[in-house]
Length: 635
Image 1: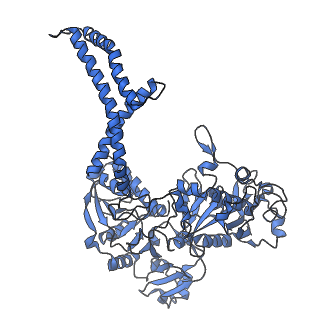
Image 2: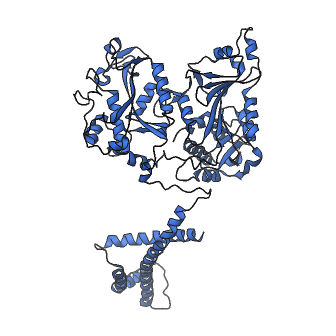
């Protein structure tokens, strides 16, 4: 505490000294030495002594009704001048004292910054050398590019429809940086995926000059590039991006938002690198930066001309030598990333650094999704048919990949996109994801899938929960018996391992909640030892009620809101919610905030059912709304 107090005192004195020093620096053209500055302060007093006394005399004489003191005016002016001179001289001496104090405190500051935190975890010093120390040991970096054709009315087709998808990877990325400028893109390049896709809508414009695709592409296909349906391509890309050899996949591309929209999939933001949005690849304007074309970046930084009719790199060009090649564009974007990988990752604070040592103290979590009370739907699977086929067994394996989708409205436009959660789940159950998740289950009520045919009703009358697991995965679906609700099953499972008796720590204010959410180390995930439960105890004003409706606290004494830091995206969302509550005047009179320990937590439940949330929170389980769940996988 003594060291901290000394630092605070030095900071205050430094501010005053710096202001005076900046003023004096602006008044002289040369920088004198310390001894010269001391002599200059003394000479300044001697030279300007008369002026100071004159100014003091004029100020006193200009005051209306001022009374002269017993001492003469010359003595008064002299005292005033001496005071100003002493202040100037003392401030000058203070600057030298502060500088010596700061130099003395530097060793202590280094000790404090390198010491352990209050949680007992050693801080990780992240430097540019961190990218060389097995930085990509748990991650695979791939390049993605898609070609689209136009559908719908209007010139060029207003709707972009997927027509080709390519994914590439560099076998020896470290050697790419050492290659001379102008080296071909096919060096050390491996194509993981390259297929034409049958458009899901009627094509009105093939956009051949950009896509390189014509009508003959589908009638006279290239034997080297197969043609698949849209659903097959989407499933294959989702499975590819979920994991490569047990590693999380970092997707690199140019304007990736357009590619993901065409594929109708999403990828965690902290695992995407968009060359059109990287600061040093953008064009600086007067007020903001603007994206540049991929061809311009490739020509300027790599010395390679792409998207042109040329005989160079013919293996990456289209067979017709017209338009863009998705393989070539993906390879160029990937090469650009590796060219600036160190600076790029440093600007993001090295998000791929393994945090296994930080999460070693936490047990793996089980995540349950209340499918009947969430805006999600199953695709590419007929659950009722599977229940009737496997009605006799309590657990079976799903061989084909299904989809769990939801709709999301873009923030900057009115477009509504479809999000598939299965690829995110597959990445979450892999080693290295923070926090550690052992399994993910989507729960459904058996009564929702009960057939009308009485001959098959006996297969649904069982009270046992049926499990359908994806092959070689900890992701699955569970359907309760016809007379058993999901709420009772979830409450029973959470009671089996969670220990609410040791959970409650104390009640706190909104300001304390914000301080707790801000107490983290170097931006790493999974660092909060506590989570906060917010409940509504009274009605509140009309403004309060609108806020409570948004947070699923529609009635007093019903529902609960959990603010936690399981992931960095969830911590930021919790912090925004806490600040929004802080801005609402008088909201602390109608809510209670309780700090809970997550040391014994083993389950996380996602549901929008306020009654179920209230029951689970009382048993010491972390409950997330769907709005919070969407932010969980963001960076």
